[in-house]
Length: 259
Image (tube, rainbow, N blue to C red; front, side):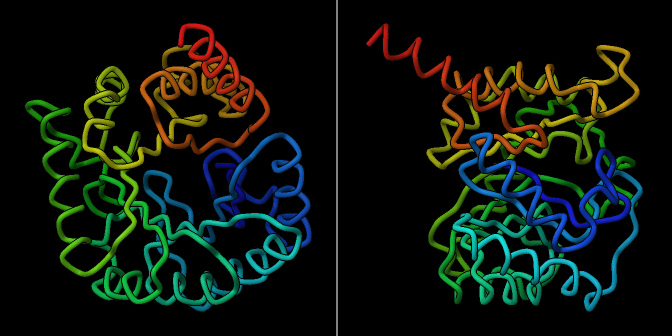
C-alpha cells in the first residue's frame, strides 16, 4: 500500500504532493515501483495534528482519487469522516482506511456498510492531538488485541462485511509499545482477518537509529516489511514502495523454496 498524502503537514512528506497533479504523478511512480494499492489521505494524523475542515479534506482528496482511478490504480481513502469516505468511494475508491477504527464519526460504520467496500479498522485511542497522552498500558499486546477485537465486533454489528485490522503503530503507542506489537504480529494475524502494518518512517524507527529525518528511515521500514510478510500480513503501508516490494518478493521466494 503506497502512501499518497495530499496534506501540507504530514510528518514525512507534508506539502510534497499537495496539488492533484503532483499527487497523481507520485501515485503513478508508486505503482511503477510495485504498489498494489494507493492510500490517499487529506488530513494529517501525525501526533499533535489538528483537524482539517470537512470541505477542505474533500477538496484535497476527491480529485486525487479520481485521477488515480483513471490511470488504473486501486485506491483506498485514509479518512475518519463518513462524508469523505462516501465521496471517495463515489469517485472510485475501493477501500476505506479509518485510523479511528470507527470511533471518529458516528456515521462511519453504517456508511461503510452501505457502501459495501472493505474497511480497515485501526487501533488507536482518540484523535491525533491527544492520543499520545493515552499511550498507557499494562500489557500493550493484550490490550490492543482486546480493544481492536471490540472495534471489529462493532463494525460487524453495523453490517460491515470485509474487514482488515491494523494494530496502529505510533497511534497512542510509545516506541517500546511499537516494538512489542511488531514482536507479536502473529497474534494479530491469528485474529483471522487480513492484517495491515503501518510502520513507515515512524518515530520509533528514528529513535532506534538516531535518524531525525523521516526520509532516512526507509531501509528500516523495509526491514519491518520483511517481518510483516513473514508474519503473514495482508499489506504494509509505506512511503517508499520499491524496497518494501523487494522485501515481500524475497520472503515469498524463501517460502516457495521451503514449501
